[in-house]
Image (cartoon, rainbow, N blue to C red; front, side, top):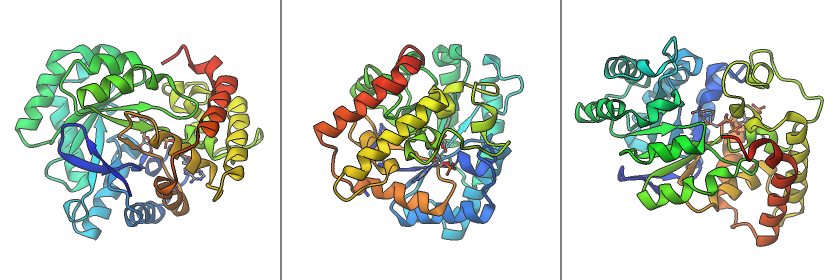
Length: 333
Ligand SMILES: NC(=O)c1ccc[n+]([C@@H]2O[C@H](COP(=O)([O-])OP(=O)(O)OC[C@H]3O[C@@H](n4cnc5c(N)ncnc54)[C@H](OP(=O)(O)O)[C@@H]3O)[C@@H](O)[C@H]2O)c1
């Protein structure tokens, strides 16, 4: 698996990582055994970056990763970089919650669940926008680095403007939604991050599964799956579900991505095509597809072995964006 250097941290990470929101309950049923098998398959396939958050399953995702790490020995033994997020346990979720005392409490809980003394990277988990320009927040994070609680910190953002604000501070990474249907980060955020040596983590790379091409207009999801309960942004930012693209439009886009993949030499899966598109974007450090099945984790890691996409395919994918997604997403986020 190709690896890339991760910002200023001195770490190298696999270009395909693993997102672990799926182990938290917001994706329907993923059993603990399935989750552990997904983790081991991903690592066996060359994945060295694992992304989670303290709120996924109220800590259960972190707990399973901790169990997995203890089963294999330690993260260091396998060169793994485990990254979590904090902030979303705050109730109410307000700017004032982003302070040293809360950070310390949340991180101590994450360290215990992950079974790690020092967390390689913590990300602010899409906080209220003013947090990104609050110097006291960054001072608190620097203090946690000096206390050896964390090695480095980054931010997860909803908007490109938030990313550009955070780039004025000493962050190691930005996690942002970027995929065939969400291209705005390519305009300013990726070049600015590259110029500053800040790592970019592309999340929701498959538009919550739409880009796998497997959904139809009549597909239904479990009641506890965010693709049921957040389709219109009822619970959190609508951009986190299907990348903010209306479902029917996204299904048609997925179908066209699948047609292109089927016509390619070697016939990659549509998901692999979508991941390869991201690998080829200048400024992307790593991509973190989520997986609810073992086979998905294996196939997603394999996307790193595909050849770079041809100009003709890039052009076709851009037309899909223009037709199905741009009218709904280009002016947002
Ligand atoms: N605010 C934040 O910071 C934030 C928000 C969202 C996500 N994240 C992180 O980003 C990660 C990735 O985003 P995401 O999980 O929301 O979306 P995603 O990676 O775009 O989509 C994941 C879903 O795509 C489907 N899928 C994955 N691989 C597949 C394959 N090879 N073939 C067919 N279908 C496949 C699965 O759907 P089925 O389950 O239906 O099979 C899977 O649950 C998360 O796990 C999380 O770590 C962070």
